[in-house]
Length: 349
Image 1 (tube, rainbow, N blue to C red):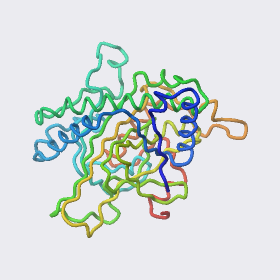
Image 2 (image 1 turned 45 degrees about the horizontal axis):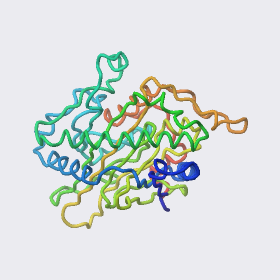
Image 3 (image 1 turned 90 degrees about the vertical axis):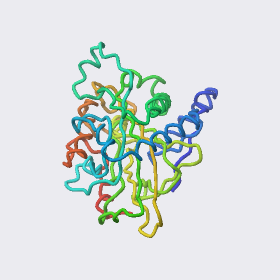
């Protein structure tokens, strides 16, 4: 299975015909796979490497130093998440799942106008202040610089999505102009003296993303797997210089399942892999305004294809999804995986 490649520079720099062709390619990718390899994103590779280097320094700190920047509540998507503190499969409504083998550092927008009633009255804590460690000092500016660039790419993609779905170019802007934005800098490392994972334990358990669109940097090493159109698990390794982009549950609901919110997971390295095994990824989640009401798009419903999903408020959906894995309970949020959920229990792929 091939993950479609999309050159985003054709949207910024191309003529009308090139932009239309690109939108059609995105529509095909979202209908069939739900993942894309995005090149031409214009993020400076030096900026990416600087961000990764400072994150490596943070994850190399003693555990006590990292735990000092944990959030006060599991619903606050900020600061450090320790290995084994989450199990992403719970977000699918699964009743039991083994803890995941990753650690992460989570950030949101670093500058928020807290005098603005929209942010001041945020009922879910989506715009909580970031929790930065005192060391490494270079981490904050490096992470914020990449965050801003990933946000630019995500916003640009929503314009492409609108055209691909037969809407006006900026149709999504009123739903995302104050979007919940969270970025997870994720560190997977198996050290030589670590015990082997438990049976069926993942580096990150099977899940769909929760919101609109995810922009993902990932090291070009194996680990990420997605469920393809054939219902089986397939390895995905990013192309040189490419970002991986996938859709979330809100987009699947908006498009009435015309587009896929694709199940994915990160598997442990092979048991016979020698020495330490490191994989890093940085996931930027662009998830819409917390008060946005997501209803099936008029271009995605018809008499023969009626709406499958009731309208949902984006913030309420997201909070239910976030809390499931962190409180180790089945999420009650709307699930878009459907029959594909069977792969989580090992009956496919």
